[in-house]
Every structure is written in C-alpha cells, then in structure tokens.
Length: 108
Image (cartoon, rainbow, N blue to C red):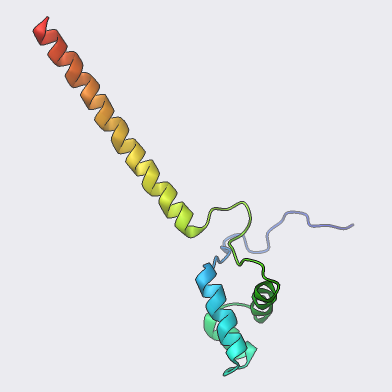
C-alpha cells in the first residue's frame, strides 16, 4: 500500500505563494546571519526547510519562481487586465456595428 490517495488532511488550507522578490530577500536575510534560521522562518511565516530550499536554488543558479504550471502573480494581473480590456473593446465594437446599421438605414 504505497503512494498518496489524494485525500487532503485539511481541504480548507490554501497553499501559500511567495513572490520571487520575497524569496530572494528571505535568502539574503538567511545568509546575512543576524538571526537563526528558525527565528527568521517564524517571522517570515515559512518553514525553516523552505528557506534552505530557496537558498539551494539561488546557489545552484536556479530561478526562484512560482509553482510550475501556474501563472505568476504579475502574469495573472496582466491576464485579467487584458481580459477586461478585451471585453470593453468587444462592447465598443458591438455599439459601433449597431450605430453603422442605424445610420445606413436612415440614409437608404
């Protein structure tokens, strides 16, 4: 009997997402060494092991990024902005179509 069954222990719990800047600053503070890793993790609201994972990623030259397959926060806001603009432009297009048809009728 191995593997995960897909049952969440706490289904209400949301996964935390941290920005690249937050992660880099956390690693910088960890390496600065003014506070123990445990205290720093507690103050930042992350697991101590996560700080060390981020530190290893930075040292390996890997980019710190959001979870794979999910858009980054900045991308999400850009995407929602573009969707709003697209909806507005569709409305304007529809209004112009109606106005064109109306004025074409009046002339003919």
